[in-house]
Length: 298
Image (cartoon, rainbow, N blue to C red; front, side, top):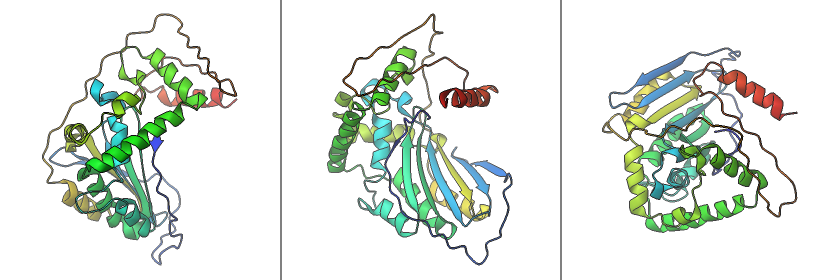
């Protein structure tokens, strides 16, 4: 999601810049994109291009903050944090450490609609990244002590947001723009909801949404398509089908101007304008994005 509202946990390391002997020197062009759906419903999107000896792996979960039920507010984002908190075979810190040890970086973000886990690695280490991300997204241990510690981390993140004029105003504008649709609720969730998170609630949310029908594995860069397809099938192919379907209320058409005025002891004044527009699938969406960029950039 745009407007700077992606919540990230950064684990960074330097990629190896040395090109392998087999580097093709391919020039920039539009590479073909291959889509395949496994029998259990999991999507696989592959873009093979050998312009540089690196590859990006992403696992998209079709669940965001707008899919949460009332007692779950903040859980989609909380799962992003739990990516780094250990699995059945990797201890806390080993998930990021293994990717970084292979010369890569790993990260994640949450939006209203999706939660995305991604890693960039040298192409020779792509299998490492896929194994780590598959393990992290499918086999998190959800240790109660780690959940308690991460609750405090997220609560502090919420408190820091209250010190940001743009963050405070952005949440207020969305709340005023969406009265019925869940886009009106903040991605991080209210602190009173986050403070109640426990293993039972976290696990139930995971089991409902992290299923093949709601997952898509995306790989782009320097790799062999058939080889990576075999690896994706090995990691995800035996998962049982099923999972939750998305149901959201329809936001009534806005009638008339709405305004939000907040008085806070900030050092500067922030102004934000919002206007109802088309959905992302509409052919006018790219032009409206460009218009917003031009108008917003002065």
